[in-house]
Amino acid sequence: MPPPPVLFIHGAWMTPDCWDPFRSFFEARGYRTHAPGWPGKEGGAEAVRRDPDVLTGLGGKRIVDHYAEAIATLPEPPVLVGHSFGGLFVQVLLDRGLGAAGVAVHSAAPRGVPVTQPSAVRAVAGILARPANRSRAVPLPLPRFRRDFAHTLSEEQAVAAHERYVTPETGRIFFESALAPLTSRRRSPFTVDFAKADRAPLLLVGGGLDRIVPASLNRANHRRYRSGTVDYAEFAERTHWTIAQDGWEDVAAHITGWIERHVRP
Image 1 (cartoon, rainbow, N blue to C red):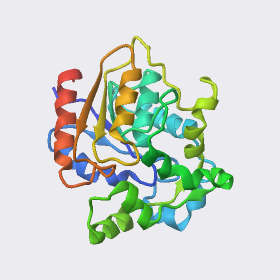
Image 2 (tube, rainbow, N blue to C red):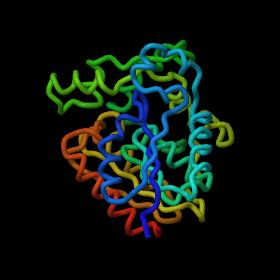
Image 3 (tube, rainbow, N blue to C red):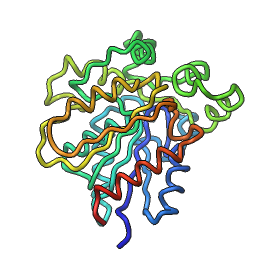
């Protein structure tokens, strides 16, 4: 039998194009892949740059609902693979009972996992310092991209990656994430029931060189789960740019191996 379908969910400041290498890798192994964009990002990076206002006010619940609708159109439950905020959305979707399994790569933290690591705080401090950013699209300038996302790239590589992939992003999700500890479980779009008994298998992946979501944050996320199959893998030399960083194949191979062990076609 063919392997299950896989639905990829990109993270902040990205579009589905960032998953192209992974999609090719998975499809070469027989997986059927899907990579819908967040609402407003369906047209790709250039379209978002031309009209970033399409992201104004976009919040976590609407994004998760958007992916729930995409999952419902598929003939069978897919494996959900998300990066950064996409990894957080994977955890929320599994909490809703959606997906045959989930993989959260360098995932943003759900409500209940404190974010105290200095580099993680620094990565969003500039956004949160301006309350007006909650209702506008915020840019990711090249120096910040290189500092936080891709600090192992050469200048030339960083410029090329920034030009190809990076878009402005809705500021609202950063405020929702930062304010999650002060928001009720019912109202926060990033609430996960860590004791849910019937959750599908979940793999959390961390990177030792990640500055936006340090490995220690991924490990803390993993420790919060108290039921079901929740595994953790850590790659020492991976930055937050892991899904496109040289050596991404090692991460992709680990994920496909985990899927083969935990998901029946």
